[in-house]
Length: 132
Image (cartoon, rainbow, N blue to C red; front, top):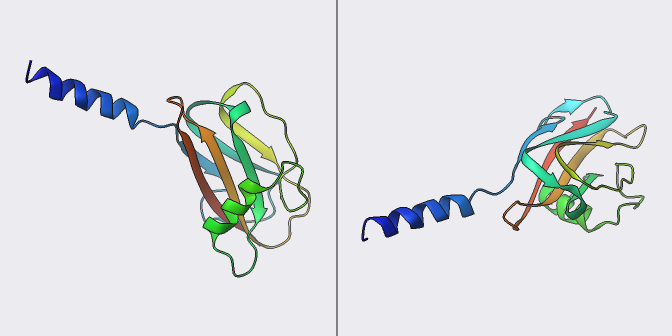
């Protein structure tokens, strides 16, 4: 019994620590690109889109990418401050593309997300790219 308890504990912890993650982002982290029409996120497993938030926003001068991501997630889906078109999401997906507003100005942009992991934990993250 003493040997089984540590094994069960280890298995439980490894399952609990396995949160859904963003496994790929296009444009890639810190890439410099011409103004893209979309950004794409790939997930380690399908996510319930209805409980997820995705935003793209220009990073204001003097603001860190982390702070810009926090601000972007606080914006309403139809905010003029966002670089992505408003979208109503439903269902589950392992990949998501967001349409961007036309003619993005040169500068740094943040892609921010908050997804609900399969185990019920929210996972927040961001990636940044630059438009030339």
